[in-house]
Length: 89
Image (tube, rainbow, N blue to C red):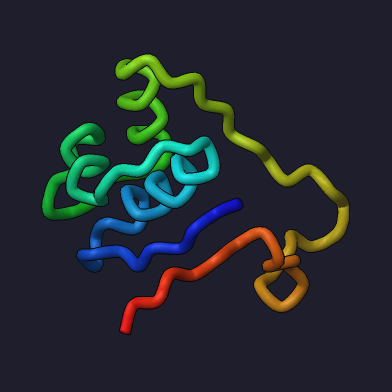
């Protein structure tokens, strides 16, 4: 199950997404810890850079490329049953 966390900075979407994915593997870390591991700067970083830095830290990372002839999935066509959002009130 994925747990959704909002990104803490406008430039930290990759770090926030990485944190969300890590929760599905039972790894609970703060976004700050992920940003530090990824060497996030004030401009953020790309998925390719994140992949390289995670691999350097010992993670095995694979990119999944959408290869269907149909249009890629959009939010209105996704199944959200596997994602839980913590109470952020």
